[in-house]
Length: 298
Image (cartoon, rainbow, N blue to C red):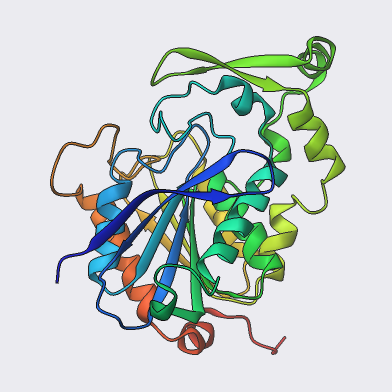
């Protein structure tokens, strides 16, 4: 059976901007585990090979959902261009946590289109890069999450902010700009981003969240990642109570993919990550916990 797709569905979030989502599913009427994918910084649901990734999971019997964070800079009419630059500037980590919560809640609504095919006890999260940190925090907060997978995830948000004179200049001007290498746009970050982080510092502590996890956690990272240090994967492995570490030789931050991705097949590095992810998701949680989890022995 071929997979079915519902594209560009609108979820009403908490922050007056739409969350745009895709569902990819083998529509066979059977209950199936759910996989929700959260993109990273300057990312979007239609980037690169994410679509092929979704098809792969769906073919393996998962209900796959990918979505755009409400303030990622895109809109329903422009899904791959950052034309909503003020929204981008207004984004912050707690908005992204709320957006992910809205997606999880949406999947579990009685009137969700594929409600009869949702295995409600088997909701799983995948987060890439910055989205990895978001999924770690949410998985620690939301007991409905069954398993967590992070791809090239950051392990700390605080260290990624400017310091000293750069931070003072940001506060004074109220905005700082970063270059989007894909489009050469100058994208704004309003000072509220840092202020929001400081106000929610305890909640946004990825280390603290990772240590609180009560579910298996697959940590995939490329050995040649120049965007997020492989040391971040090492830290997550150290902190998570039931971690499985998947180090991918010679893989970069996006495991050999790029945007646009015009090939029918995935690069071998990303193919390896997906194969291992599917194995991880199909293995009983208790088996994974027994294999990778902490014991009570000192």
